[in-house]
Length: 302
Image 1 (cartoon, helix red, strand yellow):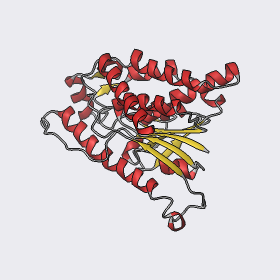
Image 2 (cartoon, helix red, strand yellow):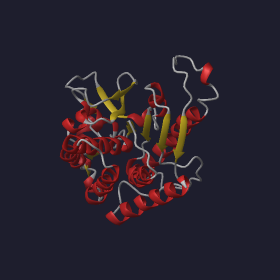
Image 3 (tube, rainbow, N blue to C red):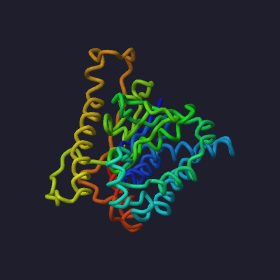
Image 4 (cartoon, rainbow, N blue to C red):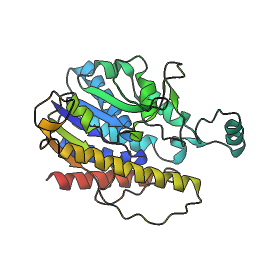
């Protein structure tokens, strides 16, 4: 089984979209796609387009699939307000006092785009399997949702909902089932793909293995949150990839696994940090980051 595994990274998902193009151009055709955070959005879009094509034509043109993904980023993610709108200080203060805090951003703009471009019927009819990861904030447990679940689209929203910045997502009206970005627990879900039987894996991460952090204005709330996220995500990403890279060597000693097949793993990740800020970007920035992702992956795969 072939799996495409897409890690988290907020707007760095544009870099990932460029890298995906290079992977598909190489001829890799996944049977399964896994995603967390921005990777959940990219993976869902890919499987959605594949399902649409399969329903209409009985086949999948992977070149068109990726062109549509890149087109989505270029046409729909052009400025910060396409992701969310910052709530007023007055409203944030009132919500905090009344214990009804629901994120710094109103993310309806992003969620409207998901409703417009992701069709649950296409996902369910797609021959390509899909799972997206989100974390239950009440239990701390990771959940990988697939399109056959009743509230899959809510899990997708939750998987891409950055803690504090974006609202937690309640699933099915149950206050016990409240989820946030899967990156709180895992960033590159290679382990889940292996558990599900994947033996040939292309994983696309969005952070370099090592990075030299530059000083920030730590009194800027958004800058501080972004830095905290980058530090933790980078470490989780390294842990996920290191575990997978050592999987074959430790195959017989990993507790809880009944699989005994070795895996073929190719990890693509930037060598330097991808610079694009959630609070200040343009369509030109998105285009440039997509280009960087494609060029890096194309060179890495030669």
